[in-house]
Length: 406
Image 1 (cartoon, rainbow, N blue to C red):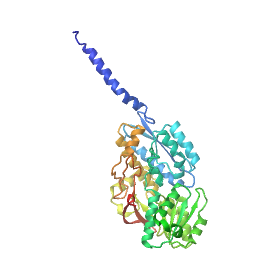
Image 2 (image 1 turned 120 degrees about the vertical axis):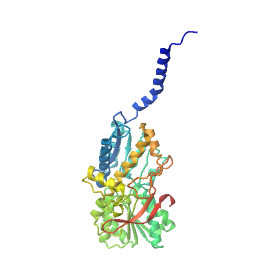
Image 3 (image 1 turned 180 degrees about the horizontal axis):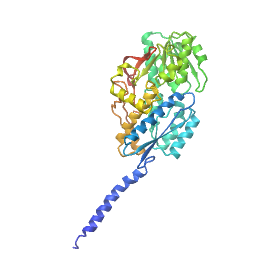
Image 4 (image 1 turned 60 degrees about the vertical axis):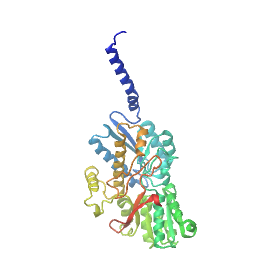
């Protein structure tokens, strides 16, 4: 028997080890949007147009990611956050998303704003198998994991919220008449559907509903008509500009209905202030986020960290603005996803980790509200609490409501 050449064995072992590593190294090199130095994340928002107030979310996230980069980034990589202004116009969203995926080659899309803009690109994104995460929308369809396996919303759906409002109205008055102003898109139709769910056979006789198009200059004529219905309860299921107009006009009309507004349009700075603090007294919305203006959080650690971030990183912003704390909260949730992903920042693993959030407590969410997802649950939040505007701030009342029980 010939003697064993130990040098040959060593060379063979090294070759085998390198061979075993090659697939992993190759995968790392081909992770779209990921290099040794950075990971690219894309978004579209409205920095101009009818809902430009909501564009602050991506501006907050930009500041947040810069802070994370200064602290070392994620998995040894800096975050390159690329966000474009689509002015809330779906054709522009299509153009910008194609640019993000095909030209910028981002790893995934995050916090894209608006029902209509996202609807224009959701099929393309899913066909491209790009994670489409934590959208700034309220529609129930964004939780449809079978139709859109790469898409995930974040906030409780508009339909769930409307169901809660309608049930609350019927608890106050069993034979309540209900009026709905809804945006003529998937978002607004979800609000209408939620009211229909609760009123059932009484919908046609007890509910008056009118729609408006995105881009309409005002909704004054609709408010005048809805006032004439004599409804004791009124829901404005729309986006910021139109909710603000509906608050102002319903007050000017002397309409004494209990008024509900979309939680996504409960911003003090972007909605309540333009409508008028006094005109909004008594308006009811729902919440899942802590309110920086609420003294209940004066000694809260999570709120203290948020306020420090705003002071140091985004001093031009209003800490009490719903859209600011919403954007910051999404940043915290995404960092948990990336932390769970470890060094594997492939699109497949990022989506896998987004679907693996278990009772994740975010320090800016209300106590009892937790983030939960799975491959068959693309609705991260399903809990909320009612709140009422008292002229100076939002005051929560009742207990946290589990949307899945509705």
